[in-house]
Length: 115
Image 1 (cartoon, one colour):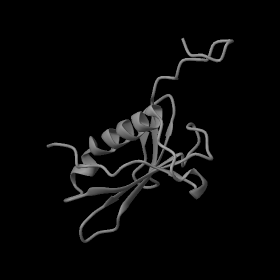
Image 2 (cartoon, helix red, strand yellow; image 1 turned 90 degrees about the vertical axis):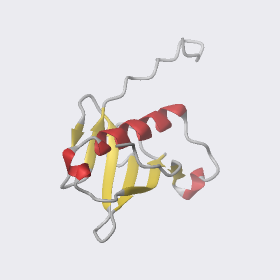
Image 3 (cartoon, helix red, strand yellow; image 1 turned 90 degrees about the horizontal axis):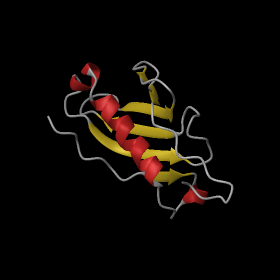
């Protein structure tokens, strides 16, 4: 089964309007969606389609609620998830909390450049 088409990643709050998501934010979005869509629980959501994806730029990527994902399910309540970066992959279907393990970005050098 192929992954459903995903909406573009938006940045919130409104003060971030017009800004483009970073490569890292896009990586987190793809990894979080793949983690959700690979679960047996997702397979039971007949016709679930991603409808919203937002990064809260006011939070650090390791804080809960950094990435919001919403899936619309025909004839049922939409499924919502709040993802953040952490060490171990975890998904709690009751709360929608999702931890996505991503490698840390390279640390900047003294000159402010990444190696």
